[in-house]
Length: 277
Length: 318
Image (cartoon, rainbow over all chains, first blue to last red; front, side, top):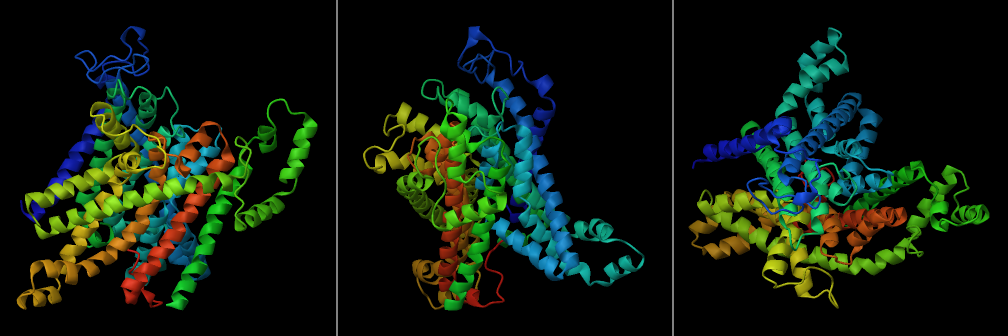
């Protein structure tokens, strides 16, 4: 395989994995063989079979159907959180870049501080405080702790183009900072931003699974992959499949987004390779 | 070097202060009365009032904030409702187990990650290279707590080689192996990737070519001429990886019943013993920033360019 082949190979596998996840999440109502919440006392802890390809859990619920529906939760949290991070990061970065002076200094100090946080632990600290942690809270919390590297990226781009003639021209015809950011700054960073956001989805999905596993995310009976592993944990020694399949689903999904991000980076911006191994 | 160390130490203060402030703000906003929680179900209103006064809960916010910061500065992380003792005591009791687990994981990750990275770089473009890259991608994509559970199924349940969890008498190698192995997965993946790419970079340099033309043996080129320069980016990655490691430890310690800070945090989550959760997180965050400071200093020692005030290429961050 030549180098370019390998690049598109990573990209292609990533795309296939992500596409599979998106299709199964969107089409869950048609694809899942059972209702993910339906308790069947007659088929508790059934091993994988033709009727239940992934077996059933301690309430007789079909693990395959729950894994399929779980994709909706992981995917929506991963993407929504990244969108929030993107918005906050762009706002902070663009403000800092355009304002300059003490505003820039203050915002960038703040960004540095957030960048040196262990953000997953911060998310844990926040989620632990809520009386009843839910899926909806997770994506907001994850979104709000993950904006710092995007802010840096956008600021750097603003600084780079700020003094160019076409920006001066855009200003002279009365374009405001928001319009300049949307029309002239974001398109320039789109490639890098896309890579960062895609890898961010992978990170968010892992963090969500981790939080839900610790009981600080989606609560039973919601079919979140992390929470399914928590429930299956108690029967690990005799019925490992209840834990195994949701974990495989997390692994494949995160792998998919990581490969997509890697592949996009190689194609869009090879310079990044050194900055983000 | 001294001004560099001082500058880095000063930069530490806002970070720790920032974490503490966020945690305080959240604790303040949370509904519920810590005094009532601590006094228990049957406490009389008077008892709760006294307790509130004792805990300083009846004071205005800014005073509580000042007290909280002053407490932190003197190592006071709060008081556990459930265990009825200072959080700092819980943490100092659990800290050695967490350090042991984290160090073992880093060691495993360094051994496997660096050697896999070197191998892949040496056989650049070969099947081995793709295998290493694929495995390292798997490593950074795997949920570590799930990997831990699967390792338990294989090595403890099916093969019966290792205990399913616990600390044993002193947290010996038999108990340490599986948790450390599963926790190291992510770091191993990152280390392999960074070692490979920085090695490839270094091997392209002119001085390596010069060494080759002088007929210096390949092994000497790798270990004497390349490794030190290739290690520079690796050192930073060890620092950033610590965040994942400490976070992962919370879940891994839970899975393996490993009596570290992570397990203490999880147990506290279950019974809603918030001071232990928040104190534990503040402490782990503190460990993270301090270790990164140490790594920065190490970095400046390996690569003197970093010590210059204007140099900004060190972080490798985007």
